[in-house]
Image (cartoon, rainbow, N blue to C red; front, side):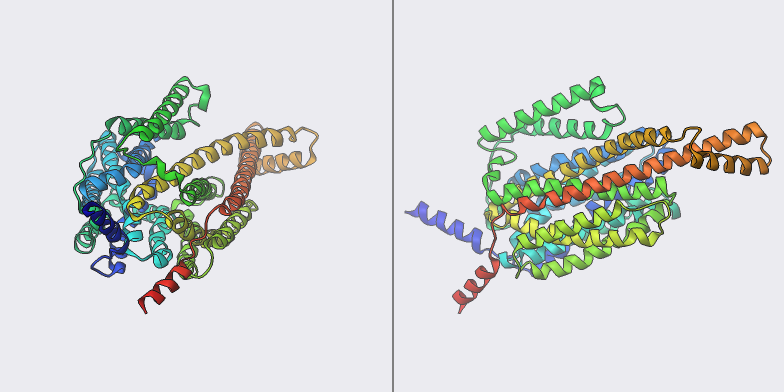
Length: 535
């Protein structure tokens, strides 16, 4: 009888617990750390050439600055829930912030590429724990009918940071030094650490001692799976994918480790990742949609800056400015959806969000070589506006039917799947871009026969121009042929980018049907019933 009473009171504590401080102070604390982490995952992209030159490294070696961060970050995402149960969520968040901030200092002070890579690994370990921790803290600190508003605040950091990251990174690198893209984390990190210590507290069930044994085998299999997968995705295109022996072996190791990891976690009494939570229909469907959305979202934000810089010749800063309206669109939609999600069925908001996202991505497929910066700004704004209609209801519906003690573990899996979707999306779209460009180039070159009047007219015009500039007849002909070939390459790249944007637009539309399999949360009914109980 006593045991039953204790169990019922414990369950009641989990359901009725409320933080002792205002939840909005908690939201500000976790949003600050989340924004810092997500920003740092994209701010270094435009600085890679400067980093490689300063540290005497090749371009291929400099990409490990990104890869090492993503691998360590990905390994920590699903493990954060287990670690939080063992040492406490607040303590883990503060350790993560401290590690991320200290690693940022080491990144800025790095004198060689190996030093920088080690520091980025430490930074990824610290950053990987913060995203799911922030999400679970917010969902437990706010009542269910305010989860949409809480996720809108959290989404500001997740959605806006990757958009302004390249712009900020380009400006800092051009104006000061690449080292300052890491040093700017120091004041933000210390402020986030101070606020986390002051405002965040653990719920009762996390204050109890957890003495579960460490699942070393499960953690090792997860590390091999994610590390091998990220290596294949990052280096596959350079190594001609499965035409390379080491890519085949690495992919096989990743697959075997994944199967072993799933078997281990399902059989273990204290798994490091509780995969059985996927039996919850909303969470399973929501996680699948999150992976698909990560594929399309990260594919778009990776392709457009490349298009502007490589095809249209924009600088890193101008490219960042051209895509910055996406952040404004996201900001507006987050504020709007934070209110609407409490009154409108989340499935309707999700379907509208994916429809708008798909339409705006298809708009990008109509870009041409004569566009102005404003022509790229409008579809970017609409694309960003769609983000709020997707991120907020998708997160709340995915985790809205879970118990509070399950949210920490669920957040890790959810964020991991979104990141894996993004990694797969970027790798796939990059491969499609190269192959499609080659196909279009072969097709265009086949039409440049001697009998083609347009080609001959262009060639003769360019030859006359170079000859008038002082080149000999032979040199003028060679320069004209080079100009013609560059024009073919540019047109082929343009068509390849258009193909990719079209593909991503259609994939966004494909995300609409799975939305129908989600259960409605009916927070409005819950809120009204809770008010009646109070009266």
